[in-house]
Image 1: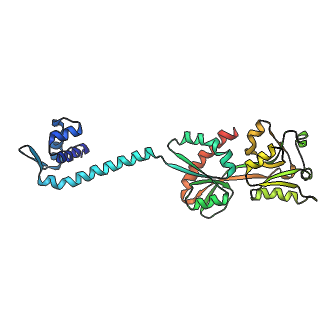
Image 2 (image 1 turned 45 degrees about the vertical axis):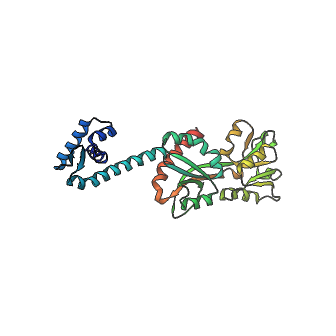
Image 3 (image 1 turned 180 degrees about the vertical axis):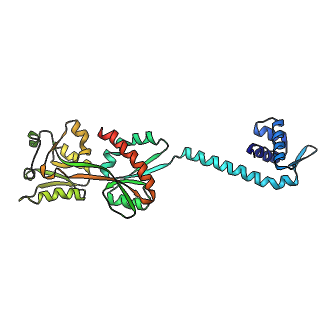
Length: 296
């Protein structure tokens, strides 16, 4: 059954005239008449009676009218729904630790936008524990966190970022490009304290020393730690990805420390198990974007 024929039927009833209905529909009067006649043949009944200059519904027309109006309303609601989706595209809420938010996400959002142009992105920065709770509370859809284990969460490995010792230009360690734990105990340290097992491994390496190192500055923000090193306030163990720009610009320099050479920061992509489809599909896009933007 043609929806345009029902539309003509509803309009003729509303305006009480074939001519006025034709004007409202931007059609000719014969076109409206033809549509009503076609609908009458399909329904096998007469819908209108013409009484002098008025057009009124027949008994069958009155019975059919609410159904025709309902069908047009459903169609209109469907159109509005599609228009709303175009005006307000789907949003992905991405949770990130500070380092990911500062150094990873800005590099890959462009690739994500190109792959999913209809999606908007909301970035939420917090600690791993906070992000896990936000995930469980449905405040974020997917998160970059330290490696976690939770029965309601699915975890996918994203990347491992080595944690290395970095010094400022002109520091004595630059002569050889390497240092031992014993050498470090005489240095002023800036320590980016994350509270994770990876960073605890660095602390354990200091336990063998007779004299503990001078941790003059202990901060919870990698940007603060990096700036303190740039200001020559001390040297620091930092995730490599966080200092890639400064290394490229030859403002910071990586020093090899054999005792902690295997220490790295492990980042995973997590989502609730109910959203496992979001995890797998979107994780692929995130990983591809990371490789293109950061590693290549």
